[in-house]
Amino acid sequence: AQKITQTQPGMFVQEKEAVTLDCTYDTSDPSYGLFWYKQPSSGEMIFLIYQGSYDQQNATEGRYSLNFQKARKSANLVISASQLGDSAMYFCAMREGARDKLTFGTGTQLKVEL
Amino acid sequence: EPEVTQTPSHQVTQMGQEVILRCVPISNHLYFYWYRQILGQKVEFLVSFYNNEISEKSEIFDDQFSVERPDGSNFTLKIRSTKLEDSAMYFCASRGDGLVSYNEQFFGPGTRLTVL
Image (tube, rainbow over all chains, first blue to last red; front, top):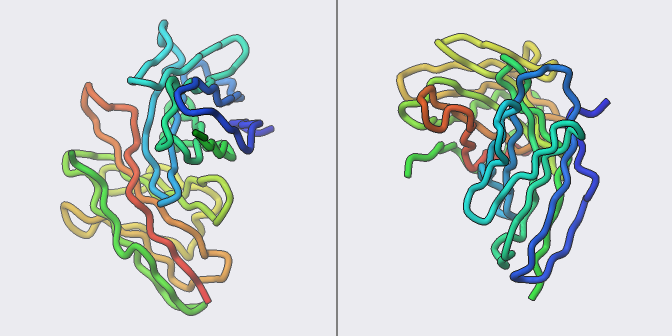
């Protein structure tokens, strides 16, 4: 089974609208962390937001928030007030237990339109 | 703002040649990583490095690969005899050990390796 599943290969959103990018995960470890990274066309990986499995509240960072639903094993990224510069590939990733590696999903290509 | 740097940005090599990809992690970070991304695919973990030794490696990281921290600032990935399938973007990442930003791995801009 895939550890991280991103079911939306591509998404479109109008400028200034909010958009939700889906991510579901699979782990039996009670301790884990979930991450979102942005990859613009230039190729670099930009860290956006982190959610720990024991965190009581959903993580927020500026226009980014993480809708963490533990029972459903989902960690959706919400981008509010989309901007043209948000057009990029977005990757969800997980770190499990004491292991240090990140396991990535296949990504969602987001295009923000005028 | 401190950042991870990588050189070169693009490396072209012939099959069978050795390549060394270089990274300078963020200066007070203690955990170092290499990932790769084959064009159009997801990012895959290769190896993690802490306290001058490999802490974890993936099945991709076979005997052809090695990592080294030759001095206090550089972190290198060596591929001894490159294959066509090694063509990918290679990302270096680093992580701190403090109370703030403990969890985040910060990525460098990547080195695009092309094996001909």
